[in-house]
Amino acid sequence: MPSYGSRSASLSISHMTESVRNETIRAMDLAILLQLGRRWLWLVAGAAVLGGVAAFLVSTRLTPSYEARTTLLVVQRQGEGVVQLNDLQTAERLANTFSRLVTLRPVLDRSIQDGNLPFDTTELEKRIGVTNPRGTQLLEVTAHASTADLAARMSNTVARAFISSNEAALTSRPGQVSVVEEALPPRDPVSPRPLVNAVLGGVLLMLAAIAVVMVIEYLDDTVKSGEDAAEQTGLPILARIEQFGRRRNAREQLPAANRPGSTIAEAYRAARTNLSYAIDLGHDRRLILVTSPGLGEGKTTTAANLAVVFGLAGHRVCVIDTDLRRPTIHKVFGVDNSKGLTTLLLSREPDIDRTLVRSLHTNVTVLPSGPLPPNPSELLGSARMQEVLDGLRERFDVVLMDSPPALVVTDASVLGMLVDGLIIVARAGKTRMGELRATITELAQTGRPIAGLMLNRVSTRDAGYYHYQYGRGYSAGDEPEPDVPRLRLQNLAAGSPPATDARPTGTGE
Ligand SMILES: Nc1ncnc2c1ncn2[C@@H]1O[C@H](COP(=O)(O)OP(=O)(O)OP(=O)(O)O)[C@@H](O)[C@H]1O
Ligand SMILES: [Mg+2]
Image (cartoon, rainbow, N blue to C red; front, side, top):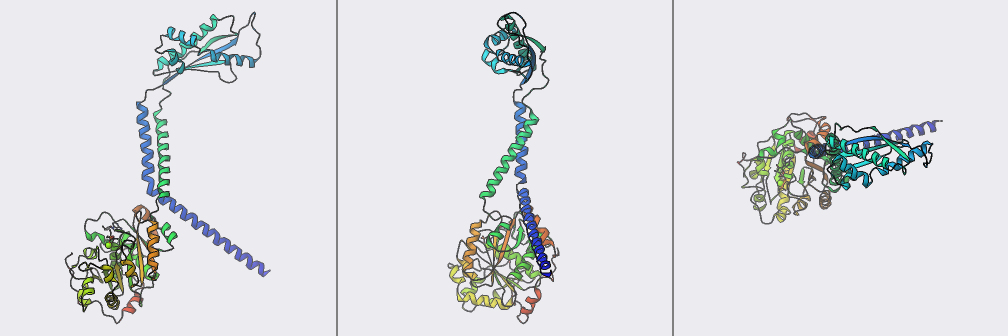
């Protein structure tokens, strides 16, 4: 019947969807495990090597212990007054009883005397062991000593002393004992065994390291590769920017410009595309605020590099330093900061065009902070600020604003109300998930869309996994690419003149 047919078809589709979902979850779990493995491999492998080497070295320095064994046979004695023991079970029991007689004090005392052994009775007792292998009439006398010869001498002497004492008590003992095999000096010590200990030490320390890693990972609530942050905040990851090495000069802070073929530049280009779609850049949406929960997480770096990649894609970009407390945009772009945003905000007749500074980077204009004011929050929330931003809207396709940290001062919240969208930067391994959530709650009050998270300073190892995803559809060069929503922006920009009257690039601070 047709209805059955369609029902079974829909069932099989939902079954397929479910299996695809499970596959995806499995793949993600595997990816997270691989990342964990990559991040902690050095510790786990290091612990294994350290444990192995330490155990080996300690073992080779320990006093060796040699074990020698003499084997005796116990048979029942035939004769008057002695119970006739014919069955095997009784013979075994006899051997078992005899095994306890070997280490009695008289036998040990005699052994020390006969063999001139360098121990007292208590010490010798500790070093001698007697076993009766199950189901046999055999006794195995073992001795432990620091040299092979001494061990053999000890076990043979004790065995002989026991036989003599047994012969002496002829009438009261129901069995006869003889040596089946004399002990020979063993070739190798039984302990320590450096190689075995090295393997054990390595495995043990490796397991301890894994346990430590699990505790660290459990207690550590910092943002890591991004899946965790995306899952817990519900925000998309715009890009993962890997660590680009220790900065020696400000220029190094612009890998999007200086190393256009690098995976970092590629990640910024991915962020540009994702951002454009996330807040539907264009029309009247041009102003983007870049902020983060705390200090030094990469707000300035993100704003500056995004400005570069937007500029390279043909958009007229203005990057404003709205961090009026610790401004650094002018250093990154190497421009003069004697005039800037604060000059515009404090002057009666702001001349935006004369304050903007063209940077050396294609299509990127900078509005530095200008001299620091005593009341940044008030200035940023003023009507004049709104006027300045309106002026910039007319002149540029994209306006990126670098801001102070959102959880430290209120400036980012004040600025958030003036923009069309926000980007939150989180620093991998430093920004805490709780801080990120608090920032999102804080910024949600602005009523402006949060486009997503930029995960900054991801370790190269973690980033490697994701570059594969960024890589597709992106060229490695620094040519403007046609795939970004440039047309839309260009259309919108039509009729609005580019930033004019901009001064040449300044010299720095
Ligand atoms: N991906 C990265 N790899 C290596 N270093 C980075 C990266 N991102 C930022 N940095 C460095 O970290 C430092 C802080 O970065 P940045 O100034 O962008 O942070 P910020 O959030 O703007 O700081 P602040 O809160 O002080 O304004 C700078 O020295 C910068 O060069
Ligand atoms: Mg900054």
